[in-house]
Length: 77
Image 1 (tube, rainbow, N blue to C red):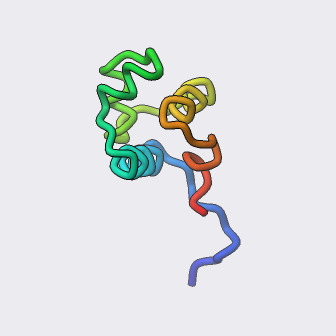
Image 2 (image 1 turned 90 degrees about the vertical axis):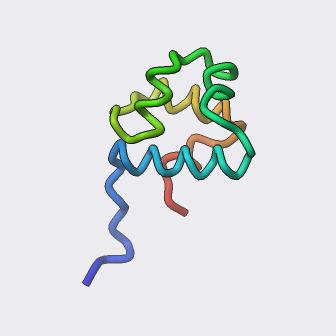
């Protein structure tokens, strides 16, 4: 039985899924994140596809580009 109080492990795949969801909610595509954040397109692609670990600096840039809180990227609730 899983513990509901145990936080979900924040893997690159989890971050990528959250980014995909936020992009879809806002009607944005990856190239918009490149435009809004200045992050390299290949890096955005790898992060969104869960193939790259992300630093707090990049998470902050992504949150800014998506006009959301950092918490929205790292907290499942």
